[in-house]
Image 1 (cartoon, helix red, strand yellow):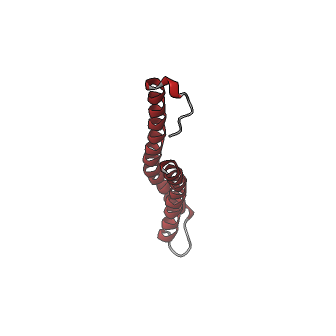
Image 2 (cartoon, helix red, strand yellow):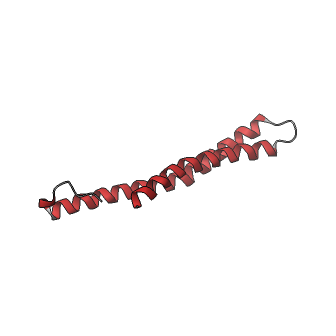
Image 3 (cartoon, one colour):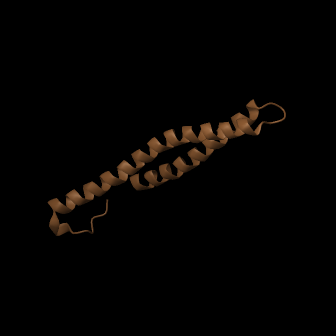
Amino acid sequence: MNHLLASIVGLLNGLLAMVIIGSGGVLGWNASGPQGDVKLVLFGLGLGFLVALFVCGILAVFISMRAELVEIRRLLEKISNPSAGLHTKL
């Protein structure tokens, strides 16, 4: 169950990044007035990218740490119980 939740969070992390970047572009478009200024849209996209990089990057680090901790646990169980072999699934 934890593996499924981690996979879902990983997928949602990518979707969240796209939503944040798109929202930055929309905010830039709305701030540009009736004619629409491309510079403000690009600024909004850039700012959205930086926010997504920060927020989703931190989330990605936690997802990666979880995977590494699961691997460390598997290796420690293998060392402490060599007769179990590699067939133990966490």
